[in-house]
Structures are given as structure tokens and as C-alpha cells.
Amino acid sequence: MTGKGTLCYPVLWTAILLAAGGAGPSPREQRQASLFGPSLHFAAGRQPSDVAVGDINNDRRLDIVAINAGSEDATILLGDGRGSFRAAPGPRFVGGSKPHLIALGDVNGDGQVDMATASHDSHDIHVFLGHGDGSFTPAPGSPVDALSTGRPHNHGLVFADVNGDGALDLGTSNNNDNSVSVLLGDGRSGFRAAPGSGALAIRRLLGAAEQKPR
Image (cartoon, rainbow, N blue to C red; front, side, top):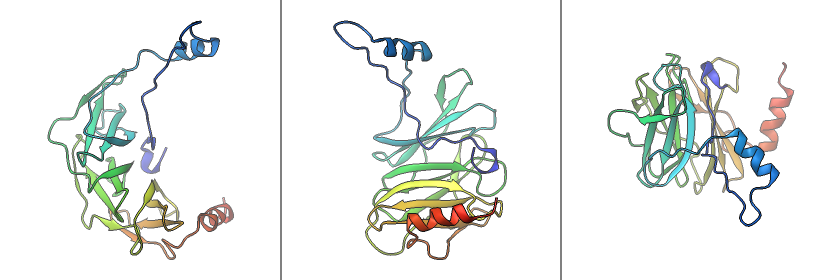
């Protein structure tokens, strides 16, 4: 679970079971096959690079959002609660320049699932507000910068309430900078860099989390 009760998984890949040739499936593969049915495939955009899961249209059924680096958009697949999905109506929205990471959460406290996307070669974090029907629009002030200097090389994006104020914050990992960025949310879809953000060594961030009173 992430903030506001939104169920999200940073990455969800289709399970593929490969049967061994020759002597047939091993006992372990037979046990795996008993846990999963046949794999299902659903069309996405070009070069999908990340997916997240959440209730996008408020029907209490999990949906899938795939971010597509090649077509620079997002594919929204609405779930029927029985393991099948259909494309959300309307055109796909632009997800930023070659987006490759996605995170879901309620950033403005309206009970709807919102979205953030990050690009591999850009400091920009794009924030999109959900309308509860499978559609999204850019949040005011979006995009925001995860870093202000250096060559971008983002390999992580996550929502969490890191300062306990009830509003979701954003975190990114900056591969070239050996740092993480923390963007504090204001609960109205706005974000600002936390003190020391972009120069926060992972060791320091984890140490602060361990020292926080529980």
C-alpha cells in the first residue's frame, strides 16, 4: 500500500513459464505451472518500460498503467476483476520525453489515483492528475526538476510520505550523481526539493529513516 490507500506495484511483468525440453518439465516447473494459468498479453505502446497497478477508475478493480518510452505515452488497461483488461477510452496522453518510470498515488487528496513519470535522460518529473475515469491531465507546475545540475540518469521513482505530514512526496535515484532526490509534496499536487535533495547519499537517507521515532 502507498499513501491514500492506493495499491501500487512499481513493476509488474507478465509471468512466463518455460518448459524444459527433452526429459520434460522438472518437479519445480510443475509446481509453478499449478500456480499460474496461461499467460495473457495486452497491447501497449512502443517500448513499454515500466508498469504500475492501481484502481484508476474507482470501480474497486485493479487496473494497469504502462509507460511507453518509444511512443512517449501511457497505456491504461482497465481491469474487470477477473484477470482480463481493456484499453481505457480516449487518446493516450503524453508522458514526457521518453518516459521510462512510473509511480501512482493520490497527490492532491481528492481520492483519485494520480501519476508521476520520469525519463532516463531528463531531470524532469511529470505529474498527472487522475479524474477517476481512466483519464489524466498535467498537474499545475508540472514538470518539476529532480536535480538542477549534472547529466540526468534516473533509475528510480517512488511515492511515499517521508515527513509524516499526510501528503505524498517523491523520491528519485540519480545514477550519475550517486545521490537520491526527495521532493516534498504539499498535498495539492505541488512539489519542492527537500533540504539537501540531490546531494543526499543513500546511506544518510536510510540513517535518518532508522532514527525516526516510531
